[in-house]
Length: 417
Image (cartoon, rainbow, N blue to C red; front, side, top):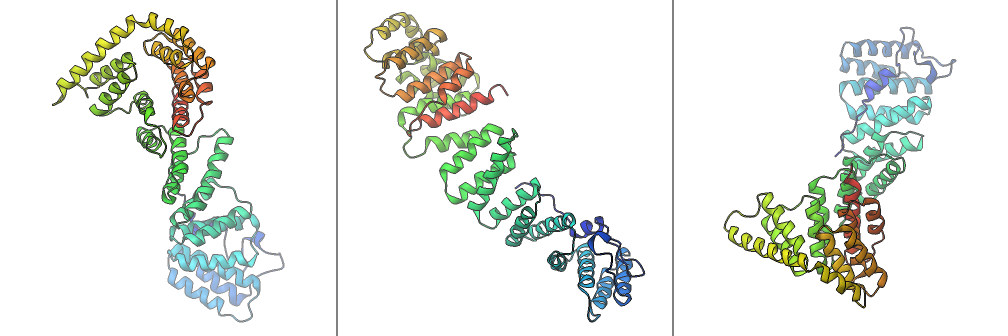
């Protein structure tokens, strides 16, 4: 949870200039008409209460205020001053219940200047939030904004009050509004706010909303744990195509998220099965470089896989020219796309991208959205980020291809920041 600045009612009222003179005049003149004053029988006990409060004798001060309150036929102004003074003493003494009750009466009187009243309304919202009375905190926060208040901390307080009060949909709506406002103003939404937004969706069981919040988190606070959660959520959603497993590993590798021997070996095996031995060799070498492969009980198995990938990659490199001719003679675009992508994975970016574009243009590709995803990845590997983002943002589909393309685009957008 974001730490919220709590506005203390007692300190606030003192800062606003509350002072009762020995003659019964109240020093905060902007709060009353010039013709209004306190009668001596009301003003004197309030002055005594003020002196006792300064001496930290709060119980005695409240007793004096009670004496003032007992005076019959009080004017509305006198009642207003009594409520104000009682609220100040109670808040200073730590009696939040009495303080909030008193200051609610002050606001209800309608006698306070708007600017000062807004501060009291803000303090009431803070007091109820601190007391964990979230419905009242929400009510006073809403009153704050209705009366023209504008404060980021109060927006956070409102959203967190909804969340802590179990009103997750309303909390999410407030947070989404704040996030959109930040983005529209060119500001990065705070990580705390995005975490809370993600929590709202998680509490509601809204996986789509949760994934959207995670995407915001990896955009503005790209921590490994957020990426790991996001990639897991995307690849385990119903309808995610099995054929995209290698693409998920590609992204995981680019993010530095490969952490186990199984990650590296499975990714390498999938690359070999797809006909991309150069990619398999690269994955395995990174596994060795990280210290994950080549150790433990499976060290010999890792070595065999490494040797196989090295052999296959060498053979594949020798056949690239022949493959290029086959791509040119192909009836549809499937072979040019796949062969071109293999060229890219072998480091021949320009030739590979040209083949892939030709294949997509030719048409008849079995999985056209996959082809665009791979073309976007190819552009990224070639260092052409602007073109990559253009292609990745064009990827569609509901089988996970568009999801992965969107994540690649986020990663590409963060790469130079």
